Image (cartoon, rainbow, N blue to C red):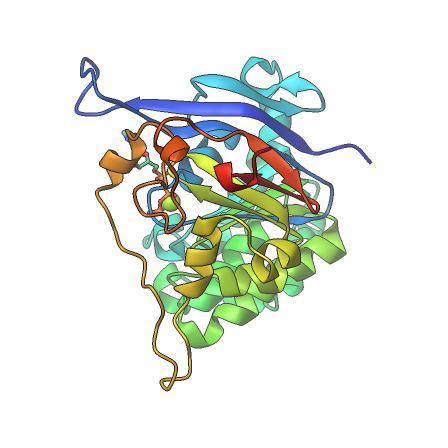
Length: 317
Ligand SMILES: Nc1ncnc2c1ncn2[C@@H]1O[C@H](COP(=O)(O)OP(=O)(O)OP(=O)(O)O)[C@@H](O)[C@H]1O
Ligand SMILES: [Mg+2]
């Protein structure tokens, strides 16, 4: 089957400090990836590496500065029928209490989506459609009927948000840190829903997270981002069990150990983000334990290795 979406050398440049400022950062720097039908593709990396910017370009909230986003071999930016794309791609955001206006009933969002996309049939069929999607996430219309967002828990509200995103039968869900605001004890059950949605509705998911543990659990493939670049990508078990890029290794080592006997290894040091973005050569060279002279001069090429792609001079022929 063909890809749902292809990104080719996708790039976003921001001017810092206003429109006429000379300082520019390449928040997303020539990244390429494709999304297969019914797979979970994770974008992971620390704060400020370009994950949300990538999502916003796919959702049409930002224009790419360069590169392409192809949907059925058409460039998204030039797509005439944008509404067809917006029906195919839906978003689940980080904070469900921001997604839903506190003064509007949760069910209104469902009816509104149905109207916006002209999915409405008669009243009974509309309710059946909503009920079907709510049941898929472990809720029912009775749970949300007449309720305002404040009357539901964070976990319930995030489930409702996922159910709403499914109304249009999308091919792609973009979930940007969907559980970071959900109570820790409920996180895994919400994350698991994405796997379930992927398997039962054949919807692909771009899962955006800092959290490699949940990513490992639900993803098929993963891309590790650092300061705008994808530094390593491939099947999730391959990348996380046998990491090649020194940054991927550092990220894995800095996952807090649940056992207090094991000291936390190399907690990630937060360097000045902008300084790293503006760095010549490999953006990670300032923190890399295996840095070489060439790393400070040249951005490494992508190298294919054991089914993964790594952007690192260590592996370049
Ligand atoms: N509208 C904007 N104008 C200028 N710079 C921006 C803008 N949006 C994002 N940036 C910068 O682009 C870089 C990437 O930001 P982005 O929000 O994509 O990161 P992220 O990986 O989603 O981070 P987080 O994990 O904190 O959500 C950051 O340095 C950020 O400050
Ligand atoms: Mg973000």
